[in-house]
Amino acid sequence: MGKSRLEAFSDGVLAIIITIMVLEMKVPQGAELSTLAPLVPVFLSYVLSFVYIGIYWNNHHHMLHTMGHVNGSILWANLHLLFWLSLFPFATGWMGQNHFARVPTALYGVVLLMAATAYWLLQRAIIASQGGGSLLARAVGKDVKGKLSPLLYAVAILSTFVDAWVAQALYVFVALMWLVPDRRIERTLESK
Image (cartoon, rainbow, N blue to C red; front, top):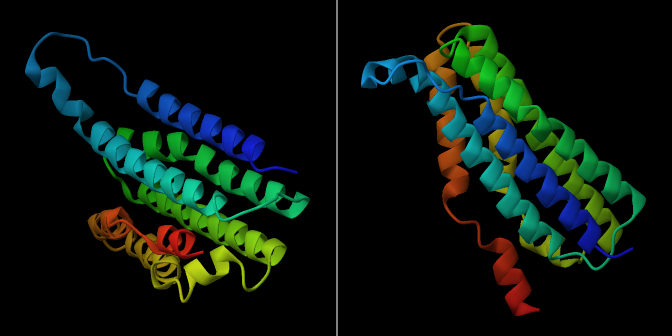
C-alpha cells in the first residue's frame, strides 16, 4: 500500500486537533483588556500544545518520506500515535483552565510521554518494515533527543507533585529542544 492515504489522514487529524484546541479558548465577556487576564493560562497552554503538534506534524512528515510502502503494523502504530495526540485538546484545556495545577499538569505530561512513546513505536514499525539499513534507520542513528524526551517527561510528571512550575519548565525545554530543526532525515534523503 502507498503512503499517501496515511499521510493525508494523519494531516487531517492533526488539523482537527489544532482546531479543537483553539475552539477551547472561549471569548471573554466584556470589552476591557482586563477581561483577557483569566485567559492567559489557557492561551499559554494552547501555545505550548500548538508547538508540540507542529513538532509532531513536521517530524511525522519527514519520517513518512523515508518510506516506500505501508503495512498493517505501520497503520496501527500511526493510529496509536494519533490517539495520544488527539488527547492534547483535553489535557491542554484542563491544564490551562486550572492555571497549571498539579494534577492537570501531571496528566499533560502523561499525554506527552505516551505520544513520545507512540512516535517511537511508529518509528520502530517503519524500521522493521523497511529494514535495518533503511533511510529511517540510518537517519535516526543514536536518537539522543528521542531518548532524552521521554526521560524528561517522566521527571516532569514526578516533579508536578513537588512544584508544577518545574514540570512546565521541562515541558517547554523539551519543546525548545525539538524546535531546533532536526536535519537528520533531510540529510539522509539528500545523500541517497
